[in-house]
Length: 191
Image (cartoon, rainbow, N blue to C red; front, top):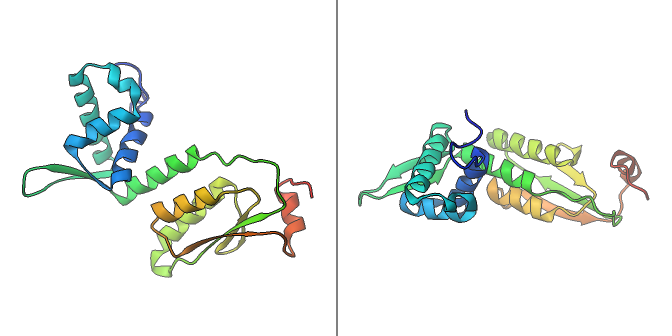
């Protein structure tokens, strides 16, 4: 797979992220509205002639569909629409989590706990959530209890919304608990 598009050397990944964001934000997007929405997010595309813009956005759409990130379907009135699949939702989550840089500020002596209760029948979803928390630098206290020393409420909210776990994920902030000295060492924090 090529990493860059032919003309203008715009990274494919940048356009794919923009495309997933357009569809992910709206939920379902008409194919006619897809191209203008993508152009707003990928400014380098706007300098191209209109036929190249259309060609590039159609190519991106086909690639995303081939990878299983989106589905394109037609309605009875003849309009085509684009919708994210589970794989597309997961890729969008990964892009957004990597974009959210958890800035390690000066520690405020408070701990952020992320607790979740995802049923056994949703094991793959639970596994994805754990992988995301681990990649962010959180440490597992118990099976469904993870901890981080810096503010990350926006990341927890992003996980809740993109994984559709509104009531299953809880974000808490606490000052002290009996294991915090060991965690201070793990996170290299000065008490």
